[in-house]
Amino acid sequence: MIENTDAKGTSRRSLLQSAGLVSAAVGLVAAVPAGAAPVRRHTGGATASDVAVMQGALALEHEGIAAYKIAGGSGLLSPEVLAVALVFLGHHEGHRDALAKLIARSGGKPVEPKSNDEYIKSLNIAALKNQADVIRFAAGLEQGATNAYVGQVAALQDKATAHLFGQLGADEAVHWALLNNAAGGTVPKAAFLFS
Amino acid sequence: MLRILATAVVAGAVLVVASLAAAAPAAATGEAAAGQALYLARCGGCHSLDANRIGPAHRGVVGRRVASVPGYAYSPALKRLGGVWTPARLDQWLQGPQAVAPGARMFLTVGDPAVRRDIIAYLAANPATP
Image (cartoon, each protein chain N blue to C red):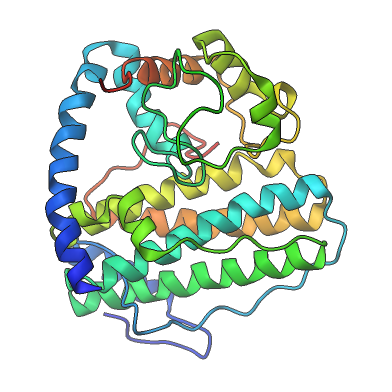
């Protein structure tokens, strides 16, 4: 499924093929940590309010990471889909690292993840019965995450933090697009898919 | 992990059936039906009807006392706010949570009045379970 990879990750073409052809889910293997993307450096300047926004974003990334790991470890995913999921997991781990670093540099204490048991319960992960379920579930999380990032940019005071949120939202939008396609979903006709 | 998942599968299946049954009335009205998809897309990153996640569970929020969901760690700002979540107040909240309760943990805003109306209709269509 994932054919040509460079030192930093999987080619876009491979991912599109993977998500489109498999037409199934997403997930991850807890025992196989994916390589996190390099953490982008941002200069200081985040306000206390910005830190609060980032804490929510970090909590969201913790949840996403747990969801991918738990669902991936369930054995519901084919190797091909799992490979794509691991790429996405790596992105979320990169997001987590960037947010945690910026929060700490701005004087905050990065929020910690909940336990896997808590995530299994709150996300109702046990209801996922097959690969298609996992894909739809992951697509929903990614859609919500994209809107969460896009919908909070205007609240940010620091331009570097706003730029980071733009990056984060764009990554989530790519995830959603691939998963939505794999799930057989349609693309909304109206412009501004996220707001 | 697998043991936990196996146990949770059974419980989860029951929850799913219960949730679907409880959500059925939400599709009965036009606004609420549209609001369901909008809720999932716009609020689903942090919220669910039946679980505390980044934000508190939403089932029964219309008519509920502010900051009263058991098990959710509210900000001091929300604890101080007081009162009840009415549709009108939720509409204000979605326009600017920081204006309603400065220091609240929510910063996301929903600018489109029609979207807010549909989301609130969906929430109103999902009252607290007895």
